Amino acid sequence: MSGGGEGDTLEFTPTWVVAAVCTVIVAISLAAERLIHYSGKYLKKKNQKPLYEALQKVKEELMLLGFISLLLTVLQSSIVKICVPKDVVMHLLPCSLSEAPSHASPESQHHRRLLAEEEAAAAGGYCTAKHKVPLLSLEALHHLHIFIFVLAIVHVTFSLLTVVFGGAKIRQWKHWEDSIAKANYETAHVLKPRVTHVQQHDFIRDRFVGMGKRSAIFGWMHSFFKQFYGSVSKSDYAALRLGFIMTHCKQNPKFNFHKYMIRALEDDFKTVVGISWYLWVFVVIFLFLNVNGWHTYFWIAFIPFVLLIAVGTKLEHIIIQLAHEVAEKHVAIEGELVVQPSDDHFWFKRPQIVLVLIHFILFQNAFEIAFFFWILVQYGFNSCIMGQVGFIVPRLVIGVIIQVLCSYSTLPLYALVTQMGTHFKKSIFDEHIQVGLLGWASKVKMKRGLKAATDAGTSIEGSTVRLQMSGINQKEITPT
Image 1 (tube, rainbow, N blue to C red):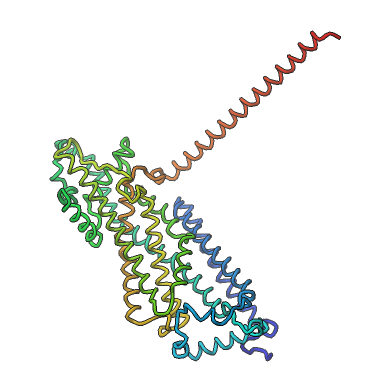
Image 2: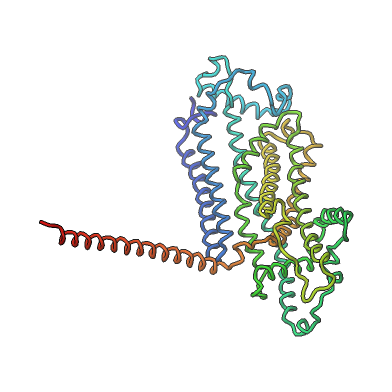
C-alpha cells in the first residue's frame, strides 16, 4: 500500500496523524469527564442531591453507550462473517431496492464501495465463497452504532430541557405561595367569618360543572381544553396546597408547599433522564417495523402525542373530581375549603403511572427527533428512509408541540396534582432531615442488633454455666 492512501491501516499511517487524532479524542473525553465531575461537586455543595443523582444517571447512560460501542467494535469482524442466503435479506427493507441507486449520492456510493472492499478483504471473501451475503454489513453496523449514540444524547438533552422549562414554570408559582402564606397570618384574615359558602369559592366556581351524566361529559371536555391554556390557576394551587397540608402536615401550617414540589420534581428527574429496558424494547420494535411503504416513522409520532393529551386531560380531571367531592357534599362548611387527597383518582390507584407515561412520552419524542437528524446527517434529506415531505413536516410539528406542551403544561400539572395521592413523597423532608432520619434508623438497627447479640451471648453463657454446674453436681454424686 502507498502511504497516505484511503483504507490504509496503522502500519502505513504517519505517526503524527495517529498522535494528533489520539490527542484530540483524549482531550475531548477528559474535558467531558471533568465537566461532569465538577458539575457533580457543585450540585453536592449546593445540597442538590436529586439533581446530583440525575447526573449520576447520565454517567450511567454514558457508560452504557461506551460498553455498546466497545461491544460493536470488538464483535464487528464476527458479525460481518455471519452469512445468510441472499433471499433472507431481501424482505422487510426500509427502502425499495429499485430506489437505492436514485437516492444514493455519488459520495455515498463511493464510501459504500470502499467499505465493501475493506469488508471483503477483512473477511477474506468468507461469505462470497459460500455464495451467501453478510447478515449485517460493516457500513450498516457503523450506522447503527451512530444511531444508538445519537438517540441517547438527544434523549438526555430533551429530558433536561423539559425539566428546566417545566421547573421555570413551577417557580413562577412562588409568588402564589408567598401571598397565601402572608394572607394566612394577617389579622384581617383571622377575623373573617369562619363559614365558607362552597358554591361561592373561586376553586369551585372554576372547576365545578354541575351534577349528573352531562356534568361528567362536560368535565372531561373542560379537562381536555384546559390543559392548553392556564392549566393551573391560583385558586387551584391554593385549594390543592391546603388539602395537602391538612392531610399530611396539619401540625405545620407554615409548611412551604412550593419548595416541596420543586424537591419532588428534582427527585423524579433522575427517573425521567434514564433509558429503561422497556424503552430499548420499543427501539427494537420500531427498527423492526420500519418497513418501506408502512410509514411507521410517521404513524408512531402520534403515540406520544395521544399519550400526552391523555395524561394532561387526566390530571386536569383529577382537579375537577376534587372540586366535585366537596361541592356535592357541602353547601357551606366551617373554616376553609379543604379537598381530600386520594389515590383513587389516579389510574389503577397508582400516581406513579403518570411518571412512567411522561418518561415514555419524552423518550418517544426524543427518538423521533433523533431518528430524523440521524437520517438527515447520515443519508441526506432526499433519502428514501426520510420519506415524503408530507410525512416529514407533521412529524416535526408534532415533536415541537409535544416538547412545548409537556414543558409548560403537563409537567407542572404532574408536579402539583400527583401530590394529591394518599401518601406523601420522601421529598417532604429537607435534605438534612432525611439524612438524620436515615442515621437514626441505622442506629436503631445497630442497637437492636447489639441487644440481640448481647441477649444471645448472655443466654449462651447462662447455659454454659448451668451445664458446668450440672457437671460438677453430677461429679460430686457419682460413685468412684
